[in-house]
Length: 276
Ligand SMILES: [Zn+2]
Image (tube, rainbow, N blue to C red; front, side, top):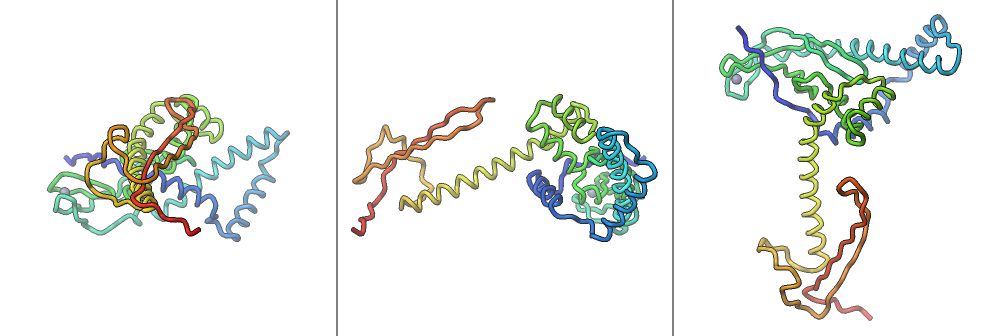
Protein backbone atom coordinates (compact mmCIF):
# COMPACT_ATOMS: atom_id res chain seq x y z
CA UNK A 1 0.00 0.00 0.00
CA UNK A 2 1.36 3.37 -0.95
CA UNK A 3 2.36 5.61 1.90
CA UNK A 4 0.59 8.95 2.24
CA UNK A 5 3.18 11.67 2.51
CA UNK A 6 2.90 14.88 4.44
CA UNK A 7 4.68 17.60 2.54
CA UNK A 8 7.11 19.79 4.44
CA UNK A 9 5.99 23.23 5.46
CA UNK A 10 6.93 25.54 2.64
CA UNK A 11 6.09 28.88 1.14
CA UNK A 12 7.59 30.02 -2.11
CA UNK A 13 8.05 33.56 -0.87
CA UNK A 14 8.85 35.07 2.52
CA UNK A 15 5.92 36.78 4.17
CA UNK A 16 7.18 40.31 3.53
CA UNK A 17 7.60 39.55 -0.18
CA UNK A 18 4.10 38.13 -0.30
CA UNK A 19 2.73 41.25 1.36
CA UNK A 20 4.64 43.46 -1.05
CA UNK A 21 3.49 41.39 -4.01
CA UNK A 22 -0.10 41.66 -2.82
CA UNK A 23 0.18 45.43 -2.59
CA UNK A 24 1.67 45.64 -6.07
CA UNK A 25 -0.97 43.28 -7.45
CA UNK A 26 -3.69 45.52 -6.16
CA UNK A 27 -2.11 48.55 -7.73
CA UNK A 28 -1.63 46.92 -11.13
CA UNK A 29 -4.74 45.56 -12.81
CA UNK A 30 -4.35 42.27 -14.62
CA UNK A 31 -7.71 42.57 -16.36
CA UNK A 32 -7.46 44.22 -19.77
CA UNK A 33 -9.75 47.08 -20.74
CA UNK A 34 -11.74 44.92 -23.13
CA UNK A 35 -12.14 42.10 -20.60
CA UNK A 36 -13.29 44.63 -18.02
CA UNK A 37 -15.91 46.01 -20.38
CA UNK A 38 -17.20 42.47 -21.08
CA UNK A 39 -17.38 41.71 -17.37
CA UNK A 40 -19.23 44.94 -16.63
CA UNK A 41 -21.70 44.24 -19.43
CA UNK A 42 -22.41 40.78 -18.01
CA UNK A 43 -22.80 42.20 -14.50
CA UNK A 44 -25.20 44.90 -15.67
CA UNK A 45 -27.28 42.40 -17.65
CA UNK A 46 -27.43 40.12 -14.62
CA UNK A 47 -28.32 43.02 -12.35
CA UNK A 48 -31.10 44.19 -14.67
CA UNK A 49 -32.69 40.76 -14.32
CA UNK A 50 -31.95 39.83 -10.70
CA UNK A 51 -30.49 42.83 -8.92
CA UNK A 52 -33.48 44.76 -7.62
CA UNK A 53 -32.71 46.32 -4.23
CA UNK A 54 -35.18 48.19 -2.06
CA UNK A 55 -32.66 50.44 -0.37
CA UNK A 56 -28.94 51.15 0.06
CA UNK A 57 -28.36 48.37 2.60
CA UNK A 58 -29.95 45.78 0.29
CA UNK A 59 -27.89 47.04 -2.64
CA UNK A 60 -24.72 46.67 -0.58
CA UNK A 61 -25.65 43.14 0.51
CA UNK A 62 -26.46 42.20 -3.07
CA UNK A 63 -23.12 43.53 -4.35
CA UNK A 64 -21.24 41.77 -1.56
CA UNK A 65 -22.86 38.40 -2.20
CA UNK A 66 -22.43 38.72 -5.96
CA UNK A 67 -18.77 39.62 -5.54
CA UNK A 68 -18.19 36.53 -3.39
CA UNK A 69 -20.10 34.25 -5.79
CA UNK A 70 -18.39 35.59 -8.90
CA UNK A 71 -15.00 35.56 -7.16
CA UNK A 72 -15.31 31.86 -6.33
CA UNK A 73 -16.39 31.02 -9.88
CA UNK A 74 -13.50 32.98 -11.40
CA UNK A 75 -10.99 31.46 -9.00
CA UNK A 76 -12.13 27.93 -9.79
CA UNK A 77 -12.36 28.45 -13.54
CA UNK A 78 -9.12 30.38 -13.98
CA UNK A 79 -7.23 27.66 -12.10
CA UNK A 80 -8.36 25.03 -14.61
CA UNK A 81 -5.75 26.22 -17.10
CA UNK A 82 -2.84 25.86 -14.65
CA UNK A 83 -3.90 22.74 -12.76
CA UNK A 84 -4.65 19.16 -13.83
CA UNK A 85 -2.66 18.06 -16.89
CA UNK A 86 -0.80 21.40 -16.94
CA UNK A 87 1.02 20.28 -13.76
CA UNK A 88 2.54 17.20 -15.38
CA UNK A 89 6.34 17.57 -15.19
CA UNK A 90 7.40 14.36 -16.96
CA UNK A 91 7.45 10.68 -16.03
CA UNK A 92 10.11 11.17 -13.37
CA UNK A 93 11.85 13.88 -11.37
CA UNK A 94 15.05 13.80 -9.29
CA UNK A 95 14.41 13.18 -5.59
CA UNK A 96 16.37 14.79 -2.76
CA UNK A 97 17.46 11.29 -1.67
CA UNK A 98 19.29 10.74 -4.95
CA UNK A 99 16.58 8.46 -6.33
CA UNK A 100 13.71 9.29 -8.67
CA UNK A 101 10.20 10.49 -8.06
CA UNK A 102 7.90 8.77 -10.54
CA UNK A 103 4.60 10.13 -11.75
CA UNK A 104 1.73 8.26 -10.09
CA UNK A 105 -1.50 10.04 -11.01
CA UNK A 106 -3.40 13.28 -10.73
CA UNK A 107 -4.68 13.86 -7.23
CA UNK A 108 -7.09 16.39 -5.85
CA UNK A 109 -6.63 18.75 -2.93
CA UNK A 110 -8.50 21.69 -1.45
CA UNK A 111 -7.18 25.22 -1.39
CA UNK A 112 -8.74 27.87 0.79
CA UNK A 113 -8.34 31.36 -0.60
CA UNK A 114 -9.97 34.53 0.66
CA UNK A 115 -12.12 34.30 -2.50
CA UNK A 116 -13.40 30.87 -1.51
CA UNK A 117 -12.47 27.20 -1.39
CA UNK A 118 -11.56 25.30 -4.53
CA UNK A 119 -10.55 21.75 -5.29
CA UNK A 120 -7.67 21.36 -7.74
CA UNK A 121 -6.14 18.33 -9.42
CA UNK A 122 -2.37 18.19 -9.77
CA UNK A 123 0.34 15.68 -10.69
CA UNK A 124 1.54 13.51 -7.81
CA UNK A 125 4.98 11.84 -7.77
CA UNK A 126 6.37 9.11 -5.54
CA UNK A 127 9.91 7.90 -4.81
CA UNK A 128 10.17 4.17 -4.10
CA UNK A 129 13.68 4.57 -2.64
CA UNK A 130 12.81 6.89 0.25
CA UNK A 131 9.03 6.28 0.17
CA UNK A 132 8.32 9.98 -0.09
CA UNK A 133 5.83 11.63 -2.37
CA UNK A 134 5.06 15.15 -3.47
CA UNK A 135 3.10 17.33 -5.82
CA UNK A 136 5.58 19.83 -7.32
CA UNK A 137 2.72 22.17 -8.23
CA UNK A 138 1.94 22.67 -4.53
CA UNK A 139 5.47 23.80 -3.83
CA UNK A 140 5.53 26.09 -6.86
CA UNK A 141 2.35 27.79 -5.62
CA UNK A 142 3.69 28.20 -2.09
CA UNK A 143 1.26 25.63 -0.68
CA UNK A 144 2.08 23.11 2.01
CA UNK A 145 0.00 20.27 3.44
CA UNK A 146 -2.44 22.74 4.98
CA UNK A 147 -5.37 24.08 3.05
CA UNK A 148 -4.63 27.82 3.13
CA UNK A 149 -3.13 29.74 0.21
CA UNK A 150 -0.11 32.00 0.94
CA UNK A 151 -2.21 35.08 0.27
CA UNK A 152 -4.90 33.90 2.66
CA UNK A 153 -2.28 33.34 5.37
CA UNK A 154 -0.77 36.78 4.75
CA UNK A 155 -4.20 38.32 5.18
CA UNK A 156 -4.88 36.42 8.41
CA UNK A 157 -1.46 37.35 9.80
CA UNK A 158 -2.10 40.99 8.92
CA UNK A 159 -5.27 40.95 11.02
CA UNK A 160 -3.96 38.79 13.88
CA UNK A 161 -0.80 40.84 14.17
CA UNK A 162 -2.98 43.79 15.22
CA UNK A 163 -5.81 42.13 17.12
CA UNK A 164 -6.38 39.20 19.50
CA UNK A 165 -7.54 36.01 17.73
CA UNK A 166 -11.22 36.35 18.65
CA UNK A 167 -11.44 39.99 17.54
CA UNK A 168 -9.34 39.34 14.43
CA UNK A 169 -11.65 36.50 13.36
CA UNK A 170 -14.71 38.73 13.90
CA UNK A 171 -13.12 41.52 11.88
CA UNK A 172 -12.32 39.20 8.96
CA UNK A 173 -15.87 37.91 9.02
CA UNK A 174 -17.42 41.37 9.12
CA UNK A 175 -15.15 43.04 6.59
CA UNK A 176 -14.35 40.20 4.22
CA UNK A 177 -17.05 37.59 4.91
CA UNK A 178 -14.22 35.26 5.85
CA UNK A 179 -15.19 32.50 8.26
CA UNK A 180 -12.18 31.38 10.27
CA UNK A 181 -11.87 29.44 13.53
CA UNK A 182 -9.63 30.91 16.20
CA UNK A 183 -7.67 27.63 16.25
CA UNK A 184 -7.00 28.00 12.50
CA UNK A 185 -5.83 31.58 12.95
CA UNK A 186 -3.49 30.42 15.69
CA UNK A 187 -2.16 27.58 13.50
CA UNK A 188 -1.43 30.05 10.68
CA UNK A 189 0.37 32.41 13.05
CA UNK A 190 2.39 29.51 14.48
CA UNK A 191 3.45 28.56 10.97
CA UNK A 192 4.23 32.02 9.63
CA UNK A 193 5.47 33.64 12.87
CA UNK A 194 8.86 31.89 13.12
CA UNK A 195 9.57 32.73 9.49
CA UNK A 196 8.82 36.42 10.07
CA UNK A 197 10.97 36.45 13.20
CA UNK A 198 13.85 34.81 11.30
CA UNK A 199 13.55 37.41 8.53
CA UNK A 200 13.48 40.25 11.05
CA UNK A 201 16.49 38.87 12.89
CA UNK A 202 18.38 38.68 9.61
CA UNK A 203 17.40 42.24 8.71
CA UNK A 204 18.43 43.46 12.17
CA UNK A 205 21.88 41.87 11.90
CA UNK A 206 22.35 43.34 8.44
CA UNK A 207 21.20 46.80 9.52
CA UNK A 208 23.43 46.69 12.59
CA UNK A 209 26.45 45.81 10.46
CA UNK A 210 25.67 48.64 8.04
CA UNK A 211 25.25 51.12 10.89
CA UNK A 212 28.51 50.07 12.49
CA UNK A 213 30.33 50.42 9.19
CA UNK A 214 28.82 53.84 8.57
CA UNK A 215 29.66 54.96 12.10
CA UNK A 216 33.22 53.68 11.83
CA UNK A 217 33.66 55.58 8.58
CA UNK A 218 32.32 58.75 10.13
CA UNK A 219 34.43 58.48 13.26
CA UNK A 220 37.51 57.50 11.28
CA UNK A 221 38.15 54.37 13.33
CA UNK A 222 39.06 50.96 12.05
CA UNK A 223 36.66 48.07 12.45
CA UNK A 224 38.52 45.10 13.85
CA UNK A 225 37.52 41.63 14.83
CA UNK A 226 39.11 42.08 18.26
CA UNK A 227 36.95 41.63 21.36
CA UNK A 228 34.81 44.64 22.32
CA UNK A 229 36.45 47.21 24.59
CA UNK A 230 35.26 47.45 28.18
CA UNK A 231 32.65 50.11 29.04
CA UNK A 232 33.75 53.72 29.17
CA UNK A 233 33.45 53.88 32.95
CA UNK A 234 36.34 51.50 33.44
CA UNK A 235 38.75 52.52 30.73
CA UNK A 236 40.76 55.57 30.08
CA UNK A 237 39.69 58.04 27.45
CA UNK A 238 42.11 58.96 24.72
CA UNK A 239 41.88 61.89 22.34
CA UNK A 240 41.65 65.64 22.65
CA UNK A 241 37.88 65.81 22.63
CA UNK A 242 35.02 63.87 24.11
CA UNK A 243 31.82 63.90 22.10
CA UNK A 244 28.36 63.28 23.53
CA UNK A 245 25.22 62.55 21.54
CA UNK A 246 21.70 62.10 22.94
CA UNK A 247 18.47 61.28 21.17
CA UNK A 248 14.99 60.21 22.24
CA UNK A 249 12.11 58.43 20.61
CA UNK A 250 8.88 56.63 21.47
CA UNK A 251 8.80 52.85 21.23
CA UNK A 252 6.16 50.20 21.83
CA UNK A 253 7.65 47.90 24.45
CA UNK A 254 6.00 45.36 26.74
CA UNK A 255 2.53 46.21 25.49
CA UNK A 256 2.73 49.98 25.97
CA UNK A 257 4.36 53.10 24.55
CA UNK A 258 7.48 54.29 26.34
CA UNK A 259 9.85 57.16 25.97
CA UNK A 260 13.24 55.72 25.10
CA UNK A 261 16.41 57.77 25.35
CA UNK A 262 19.74 56.75 23.95
CA UNK A 263 23.08 58.36 24.61
CA UNK A 264 26.52 57.91 23.15
CA UNK A 265 29.86 59.20 24.36
CA UNK A 266 32.83 58.80 22.10
CA UNK A 267 36.22 60.04 21.06
CA UNK A 268 37.83 60.01 17.65
CA UNK A 269 41.30 59.00 16.63
CA UNK A 270 42.13 62.35 15.09
CA UNK A 271 40.38 65.70 14.92
CA UNK A 272 39.83 67.28 11.56
CA UNK A 273 41.09 70.82 11.72
CA UNK A 274 38.46 73.31 10.48
CA UNK A 275 39.29 75.23 7.34
CA UNK A 276 38.87 78.62 8.97
ZN1 LIG B 1 13.53 9.71 -2.65
